[in-house]
Every structure is written in structure tokens, then in C-alpha cells.
Image (cartoon, rainbow, N blue to C red):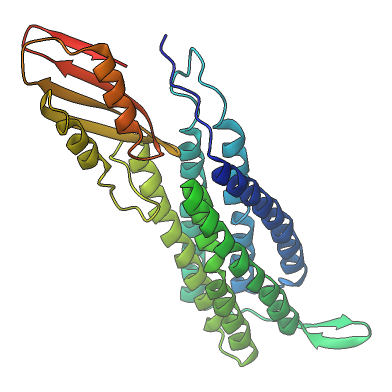
Length: 320
């Protein structure tokens, strides 16, 4: 069986991967501290509950990233000849579905509370012998959960671009946008303090909608990636790589026509080309090998590429 060659990152990518793993471990420890702190001061605020659940969901991407990068670099086997890189796409789908389902539930729950005009209350709590409005402690907890993720998110996005890792860049973008959740929750808490009963549920609905929006976007991206669509960038834009591959194949003097099809396997791209030669003579194996290598050299993610060559209607040669 012809197994796909085992892929290894460049030295620069290996360093980026190590730093990204450290960032994700730091993120997990940090998020646990936020989750515990917010749970202690959560009270009956719907906005705080929703923000707390969002922080719990925030653990999913870093965990998926660490698990995925532990599995995907295993060498191809007889039963998995293409390797395990697609596990990244599968875990990306799992994380996206969790956001989509939880965001839907939280949004419906917040809207029901608005319709029923449920009045949330935030009482006093004694700290060191002094009665202090619990809302102030909620706001402090929310602020602790706001500014560090912005810094973590920027660093993750930087390394995600080096590694072309969709889980990592999704995690980073979510971290960078966490300040919106905090602002919405703080507005809801202050609204309760000023007597606006609807402010808490409205803030919860805003946060829930943001979770739902991220979940829908990521689920769509993950599902379309698993059905072998043409490769895309981290910004979810289609690459012009198939055109470049075809142009490269047409540059050989012995090629009359060329077509290519590519698909993503996690970080990497696999594909095949179909070329028609200009004469009826069989092409030499060395020419095929050179062509496949030069096509793979077009882009570091293009890892596996096979050629099917048609010299004429009766003679078809295949090389991989």
C-alpha cells in the first residue's frame, strides 16, 4: 500500500506550535480561575449565568487544539493511509456544534425570561464584616475575565497563521471578542441596580446571540470542510491554488491540457491532477516525479499530489 509521506513542520512552525501549546495550557488554567470566581459571585443574574456558561464553553477550543495536535502528527498506517490530519477538522466541528447548541438554548432561555418579565435581583453580601452589593463583585469578576483573553487571543492568532490552524485562530478570535461579553454583562448588572428589570435578560440575549453566531459560522465552515470542498484560507476564502497547479502543469512542454482537484485534510492539502500529453508517446516516470514534486513545492500545505496522465485514448498511465 502506498502511504502518504509523514509530514513534519519546519523549524519555525515547530517553535510556533510549542508556543501555541503553552498558550493553550495557560488559557485553560486562566479560564478555570475565571469560571470558579464567576460561579462564586454569579447570584441570580441571567447575564452572569450566560457569561459564565460562555467561559465554560471557552475551554473547548484549547482542549480540542491540544488533543488534535497530539493525534494528527501520527504516522500514516495501513488502515489510515492518509494519516490523521483530518482529526483537526472533526474536533473543529465538535467545538462548533457545542457553541451552536448552547447558544441556541441560552438565547431561547433569555427571550423566555423577557417575555415572562422575570425580575432578577442582586442582593447584598457580607465581606469582612461589611455589606457590599454583590453587583460590584460581579463586575470585578467580569473585568478579570476580559483583559487577559485579549492578549492571549492576539498571540494565538499570530501562531495560528503560521500553523494554518483553524481551531487555534477560532479560539484566538473568540478571546479577542470576550470584551463584548463583559460589557454586555456589566450593562445588565448595572441595569438591575438602576431598577431596569429587563436589562439582565437583554444582556443575556445579546451574549447568547454572539455565541450562536460564532457557533453557526464555525459549524458551517467545519461541515463544508469535511465534505472535501476546495481548500480555503483561515479567513474562509477560497485559495487560488488549483489554478496555480493547473498553470504549473501546463508549463511543461509535454502537457496539452491539465485539470486539478484539491481538498483539505486538517492542516494539509491533498489532491490529484489529470493531464493530457501532446503526443502519443508514453511519458517517462522521471518526468512525472519531477512534475509532482514541483507542484507540491508550490505551497507548503500541498502535501500529497498524484498525477493521472493520458497519452492517448488507449494508453493511460498513473503515478503516485
